[in-house]
Image 1 (spheres, one colour):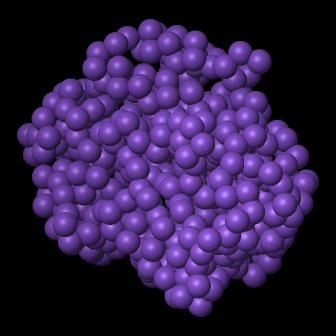
Image 2 (spheres, one colour):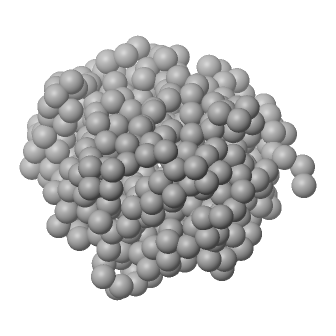
Length: 446
C-alpha cells in the first residue's frame, strides 16, 4: 500500500490516475473542524473511543500495544474490535445507527462509498494538517472523495512478494527469476526435481475469501499491460472483459489452475479456496511449500511462533523476491494500506484520529514489527525486519512504478464483492469469460 518519505524528502513514486470513479483528484479541502454533524457521538466525549477493523490476532495485539502509552497519557480508553466480516458489517452498522467511532478501512473504495452517503465525517483540521505534513498528495487522494478529505492513512505494505527458502534454492541449484517466464521455468524445475507442487496458496478469509487472488491478477495486469491500462481498469474506462484483463487471468492460471503446481501441503487446486490465507506460512516454514505469493506483511505470519517461528532474511529460513515483470529490469509493484475514517466527531474521537495520523504513532507501531507506513515522519530504522526494510527500499527507489491495490480502489460492491467471489468461482472451475462478465456487471451505473 504506498510511497515513502523521510523528513520532508519527497520520493518520486509514480502513482498516476488514482481511481477515476472512486477518487477524483487530490484532497484540497482542509476537512472539518470537529463541529460537523454525523452519526455516532455527535459531540459528546465519554472517554471511550471504539475502533472497528480487519486487523486481528497477533497484529491486533501489536496495534493495541502501539497506542497503550498514549491512552494512559490522554485518559482515553481505545476499544478495538476486529471482524473477519468487516467489509459487509461496517456498512450494515452504519446504516443501523450502530457505527463505531472510527473504522480502519483496507479499501479506499469502501470508505468512499460510505462517505458519498454521508456516513463518514470529513477529516477534522488536526487530521488534515497531519495528512498535509506527513503524507503525499497521492495518499491524501486515497483518503478523499472529490475535494474532501475523509480520513488519514495508517499502515502500508508492498504486495507481490514471492516467499521462498534460500537453502532450498541452493539445494536445487536454482536462482531467483528476473522475468515472468523465468518464474514459470523455476516452477516447472522445482516440480520436476521434488515430484510435488511448488506453490502453496490460500484464498480463505471468511467473508473476504478470494481477496488474495485479486492480488495475483493486479500484479499481472500492471506487469503485462502497464500502468496506463491499470489505471483505466481501476476507473472502469476499460471493462473487466477487456483482453488485457483476460490475459492477466490466463497468465495467473498457468500457475493457480495447474494441479501439478498447487497446492503444496493442502491438496489440489480446489483446496485454494478453503485454505486460510495465513496457513501457508507454516508450510513455508517446514519446507512443505517452496513458493508463496503474498505481501510484505506476511513477514509477521512467517515469524509468528504459532506458525513455526521461522526467521526471515536473505540468509535466513525464508526470504522473498518481487513477482518479476514480463521483461527483465521491470520495476512495477502494487501495494495497499488502510485509511482511518470517523463516524463520530466528539473530542475524544478527533484526538485519537489525529494521533493515528501522526509520525509519533507511525514510529510506535512500526518499531513493534510486522508493518511499514507511508508516513514521511517515519524513521526507517524503526523497521527492524529485513523484508520491511526491503519494501521501503523498493518504494523509495525513484524508478519504481507503484500502483495502489486495484480492488481496494474500486467501488466496494466490486472490489470487496464481485471481484473476490469471482476469484473463488474461477478457482472452482467457472470459465474466465463468465467470471469476468459477472464481475463487470456488478459495477455501479453512473
